[in-house]
Amino acid sequence: MTDIRITVEDETFVATMLDEAAPKTATAIEELLPYEGRLLHVRWSGIATWINIDEIDLPELPRENHTVYPSRGDLLLYPGFRNEQEILFACGPTCFKSPAGELAGNHFATVDAEPHSLKSVEERTLEEGALDVRLEIIDG
Image 1: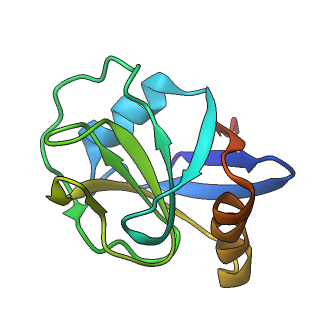
Image 2: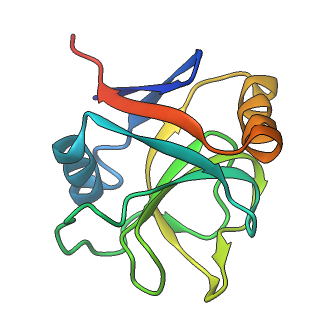
Image 3: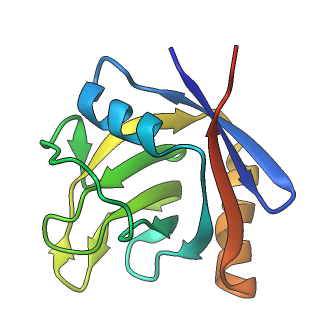
C-alpha cells in the first residue's frame, strides 16, 4: 500500500491509498505527485476542503469507488465530469456538491487523523482563507 503525506501549512497528515478499490484513480494520483497548491474551503459541501487541480491533464478516469457522501478523512478525486477537477478532503459531515448539483468523486485514499485535527483544518480555511498544501508519496 502506498501512503501520501499531506502537509497543510504547519500540520501533517498521512493518507493510505486505496489501490485495490480505486486502482486507476490511485495511479493517476501517484503520477501527479508531488503536488503543491492551495487548500480552500468547500463552500457548498459541508465540513470539507478542496484543491483545484483544473490545470492538471488527468487521464480519462472511470467512476470507481465513487461517493457523494464521503466520511471524515476521505480523499476524493473529481476528474471534472460536470465541474472543475478537484481533490476533496472531507473533514467532517460532507455531501459533495457544486453549483452543478451533487457530485460523486472517486474515493482514492483515507487520512488517519483525530477528528479535531481535521475539523481544525476546515475551520482555518473558513476563517483564514486558502492555505498552502503539499501532497507527496512517502518513500519506504
